[in-house]
Length: 477
Ligand SMILES: Cc1ncc(COP(=O)(O)O)c(C=O)c1O
Image (cartoon, rainbow, N blue to C red):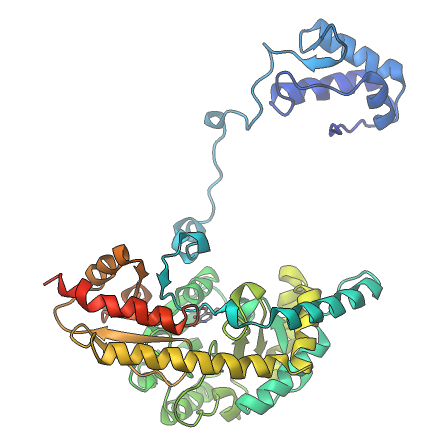
């Protein structure tokens, strides 16, 4: 083990060495009984004469910090040194993070995989069993070879140019969002895209309007920038535009698939929102987090594709089409914000992982992404149909399913007289994890319901789990 010692200049080297070793022993960084390097090794490591290290060791031995043993070697003396570990915490006054961060619930982090029940209906996760890992590995290998050949250096904060081209092509084709490669900023998921947009738009005290209920991490991101949050209700057509506060500088919406209830925003509301934003110079963030999976009806035009006034930032992600731990998403802001967004990205972390971005560009260019989407869509359509059959059939005394047009989760309102927490607790001993909708309400009284994610649970598992619920819930009386 190399000891971390730094000797300065050439004066009193033995004294410097003595003081640093003594300090390391007293602070517990050198534990009682730890063996020190020989004076010869230490002299070589530090580039000093052997006499310097011998003098320092002699003094430490004389003062009882070190001891020699008959078989040879020098050790930290047992009695004087503390046990290794942090210095006594009672002597340290903790630093206080700013109240916002101290107050944020840890629960923003989802439970880890090992703690999951056998039948887990969480939203927002995908099925890695469907993902073509062999093709992904080949794309990673190619990207790695290219990375090894490239000279070391930082890259464009907006992300891999080939990936941005692929994203622009994909958006034009599948979402009718026309954008140039240089308008796309690749991010660590939708979450970072939204966080960066908030950073470049907001000053403390600015008003941000959000759908209520909504996705808590996005809410936390706006609050972290010092925004004043205005909760705006949703109904069967999405955000109720006439309830927007006049002074909102930013509006966050999930028009393809409202989170968590799942309805899509009507065309009328979309046009009303664009008109509102155009008149007030507000930015609208369109979070299209899982709109790729559409099962019913003609896809409604993305807000971005209807935006003539340059007010919409479109946000997408590969978390729901591929998997969330990939951490790749993107923003297509209005052209006026592209420069600021790139600079904000650079200030934050310069850019994302070049290897996965290049691999993803190849994965898309070679057609694997489109193939995977087609395949996943079939599986998810089947799961969704089975879920709806259970909810509308044997589970209808408890739940009223809302039919989502898109996405990888659906929600169901509770029938009158039932309570989220009771239904969730009753299912748990049967190995079934369910999730309530109330957790997504902040400002308004919650409408109780359950959210069923079907991205991570196979069709047969859905059947096995849900077939048990009528009996389990029936026992509740
Ligand atoms: C509504 C909504 N927006 C954004 C995200 C975050 O996606 P990402 O993993 O790309 O950050 C999620 C994830 O579940 C979500 O549900």
